[in-house]
Image 1 (cartoon, rainbow, N blue to C red):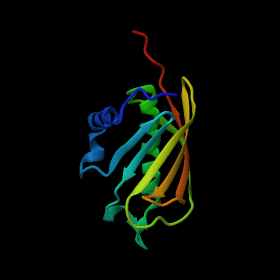
Image 2: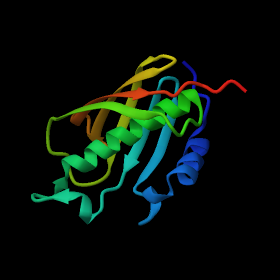
Image 3: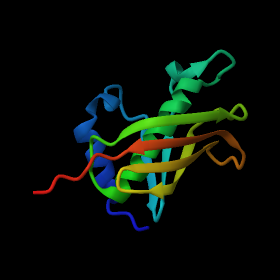
Image 4: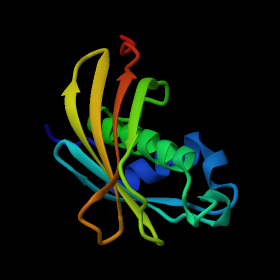
Length: 144
């Protein structure tokens, strides 16, 4: 399946529709969109760390959710009201300090539901720090 939006188009859409995620400066960057795939870079700040100096679980969950949204948007177009209906995450190991990369692949893209697989790794690391699956509800297209 081919994407219908570019990295620049997705980034512009997110800035227009979700300006609140950029209030303290951009923490994520869409780094790749390819057939059936999108990847985001997350630069954690001090507020995203938990005791022990690792990125917190809620921060990784937010990254997985945003990356899932991005891969779906990139393949269906700018549909602001696509929403998460399920997000499941397994924390596998402590990531090394530094940026995280979330790579999401579309497992199923239907008219009403999309299912996505997401791997979160430390930048340059081969082993996953977390693995998530997400299901999104896609609103019906308006006939106009």
